[in-house]
Image 1 (cartoon, one colour):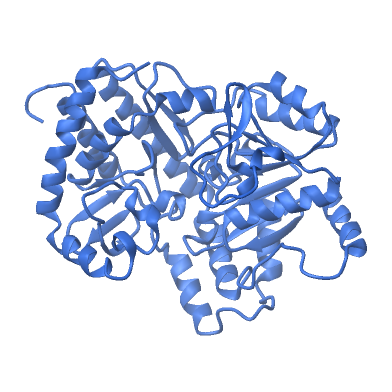
Image 2 (tube, helix red, strand yellow):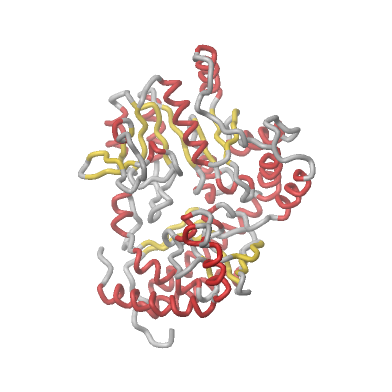
Length: 456
């Protein structure tokens, strides 16, 4: 439903006030933004860092555990955690130690390290797939899976879900518009219409997916278990399982991208639900924040890969980059998998995320707002909808960037960071009850301001 006009108007006024407050609190960041801006557009090394929509970027002095300290000396309880890259906290001790040790022994050599077999066993045991490859990012992993699926099946088309996100993979930049697949108009520099070979389907609509798969021209279904890079959409009971069964009937491979839903538990959504995809992708936090990602696959897929490799024309396959699987990444990954991504840490994360979700719901109820809070393990998100969302179209309709920005700026100025892209929060092993209470209290005060209550 549309955001009430009075809340939107108060949000705009709140943004103006909070921008002024932000500038007063961050004089060194303002100075640093000007200095960095001489060589980095906007003062940042990656333009996504401008998505916080602050008057100028917030510059970090240090980040440890769930605490970020900026160059003006302000400290923050961090629930963004690098948009999942630091989901297990900033610089977890085991990962930091492993990096320090490996850094003295070599960073990259385009050769496997002695940790390779150990990391392979850890991945296979945790996620249930026997074979693995390492990439630098989840975008690279998803792109590799798309290429392999086309090579193995001899088919061209890829099915993704409306509202999905799979990094920089071109094949996923499509959406549903008037019931038809269209290339996203925001994509820069694209010269071929992606919609020629990619299909956007409605999430949670198994009947629609079955009809598309029945054409038997789709090589791969690439999906998250839940839509997470828009207003969060959880799968209906049995949807993912039904999707995989339908794909098997029609000769289509399935890849589950758990880069965000690894918040579900130690083995992600896939192991929690005993799902058996052909491919599995995990990026961002798998090496504790160091750039690295993995994709796993079944014995059947590995056998087909060997068949293709034996018959393909010699030369570069388009899969792989020089720094993938480097020694430093493997050392960090081993430490993260074995010592950080533990059942004990997940139990702490999930328990506090439940407490956070309950607190956010309590404030929504107190202010009589028609919003919901969605949770998947350590990830919780405020959604501007009366009921949980079921599709990408519903998610797109629920987003209100003005109200989001007002809440985010208000919280940031009160020493709490949440993900700037939407209302997503993450709880790390280092997050404390005091951190959660601070976020809930700040959120309540933000709602006081948006609802015209006094004393905010």
